[in-house]
Structures are given as structure tokens and as C-alpha cells.
Image (cartoon, rainbow, N blue to C red; front, side, top):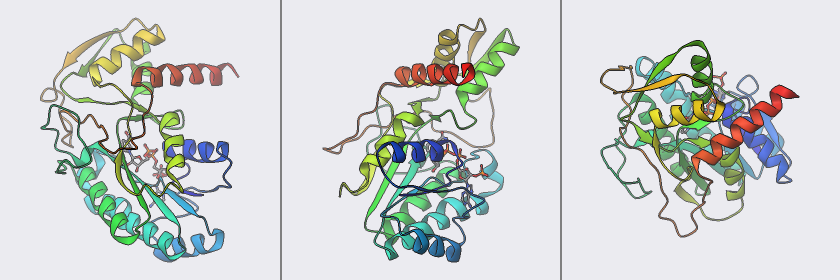
Length: 280
Ligand SMILES: NC(=O)c1ccc[n+]([C@@H]2O[C@H](COP(=O)([O-])OP(=O)(O)OC[C@H]3O[C@@H](n4cnc5c(N)ncnc54)[C@H](OP(=O)(O)O)[C@@H]3O)[C@@H](O)[C@H]2O)c1
């Protein structure tokens, strides 16, 4: 397996999960391979001849993308097409992680694979372009929409809450955006398991359950034993450059859907593994 964006939050867990599953892995960080450089991608794939490419490279600054849509599109859209097509040229499957932000968030029940897409943000548009480029370039594709990732190898909402909770007596968090926080160490083995399965196409894989960012913040601080009050606020009061879907819970309607543990189990596992690392 070859993993692009191997220095990122999901990329690092994908490399670990692939190795744990017994695969020989070529991890390539952004410094080692720019997915938007077609010649470099072709040469890297021809050199290591992977059977599966996990394309974890992405422009993930959701707010930054509003002012920088061409750059987001270059990595998430064109880069995805380059990776998928170079993989097809060596008969390799491609796995492209995508996002709940391809939906507008107007639904009030879980989004299924067949629901119409309508991204509200530049980031969401760039990821949708990447989905389409991946599907068009390689028949052996797994486009995996997931949501609200947190993992030990990257900046994430859990770390922000732990830091802010220790610094302040209270924190305001939006209660009108609902989704599924998904632990990357739970997602990564599921991505690896798709390889060689012949179950191509678009699929949703996210943690079980749903919550608002406010609920998630309360759970993080409560589980960590930090005495910081969490106050609910609204998206309108907490203005940010990129619009986010109000509701983006993902479920799969596929017969062989992948089930992940509940987000509370993901949070528990994250905090346990985090404290073991600190102790080591
Ligand atoms: N984070 C979430 O909440 C979330 C939710 C749903 C879906 N996803 C999707 O999950 C995937 C992994 O995201 P993540 O959270 O692991 O993000 P991440 O930590 O930002 O990882 C992305 C990696 O890609 C690298 N990268 C950026 N531009 C590149 C380029 N041109 N060529 C090669 N590598 C490049 C980044 O390097 P630098 O750090 O040096 O820029 C980073 O190491 C992405 O497809 C993302 O869209 C994420």
C-alpha cells in the first residue's frame, strides 16, 4: 500500500493500520510527494508499484479555503484526479477519504450515499471535485465520506478543548451543528480493510451516534475531569469564514456497510491512548 499525505492526522494512522494488517507500506509525506505534481506522482507509483493507494493528502483548512479556493481545488480536486489516474495506470485501487461537508446540512436525519450533494463551502466543493475526479479516473475506487475527525497525530477539536478548558473557567461552543465525531484510529483500519474487497464506489464510514460540538465539548471536558463550564452558543453568534452544514450525520445504506464504534468509545480510546503516550 502507498499512503500519500502520510504525515497528516489520518495518514499516520493509515500507515500504522496498514502495517498492523500485514501490508508492506510506502508512506509519502507532503515533502516527499506533492499530489498535484503529476510527473512526480506517476514516477513514485511506478517506482513502488503499490496494489492500493490510500490518498490521505488534502488541503484541510476549511476556513482558509474560502480565500484560497484555487489552492484547495489544486490539492483536493486536481490532485485527487492525478493520484487516481496514476493508480489506474499501474492497476492499483485508490481510496479517497471525503467529507460530510459535501452536503448542505438541511436534512434532519442521517445522510445516505444516494442523497444529493450540495456543498456550502469552498473546502466542500474542492472535496466533491476530488470525489468526481477519483471516480472518473479509476474504476477501482473507494470514495469514503467521513466526518469530524480527531486523532493523536494532528491538531483537532479534542486537543483544543483540553487546552482551552485548562486555561479558562468557561468556553462557548456551538450547539446548532450536529455530526459524528470519528476517531482516526477507528477509521484507518476500516479504510485498509476496503482494499482488495471489490466493493468499489462511494460509501459513508463514520462513528455511531451523533452530537453537537457543544455535546462533544462537554463529553471531552467531563471525561478528562476538567472543571470548565461549557456554554451553548449558535453558529450565527460564532461567525466563521466558511459556512458549515447544520446537520451532517452520515449513515450507510450499502448492504456491506462498515460499522465503527460509537463516538464516545472513540473519545475514550483517544484519551486513554493519549495519557499512555504522555506517561511513556
Ligand atoms: N479533519 C477532519 O475533520 C476531516 C473530516 C472529514 C474528512 N476529512 C478528510 O480526511 C482526509 C485526511 O484529513 P486529516 O484530518 O488527516 O488532515 P491533515 O492532518 O491536514 O492531513 C493532510 C495531509 O496532507 C498533506 N498535504 C497537503 N497538501 C498536500 C499536497 N499537495 N501533496 C501531498 N500532501 C499534501 C498535509 O501536509 P501539511 O500539513 O504540510 O499541509 C497533511 O500532512 C482528508 O481527505 C480530509 O479531507 C477530514
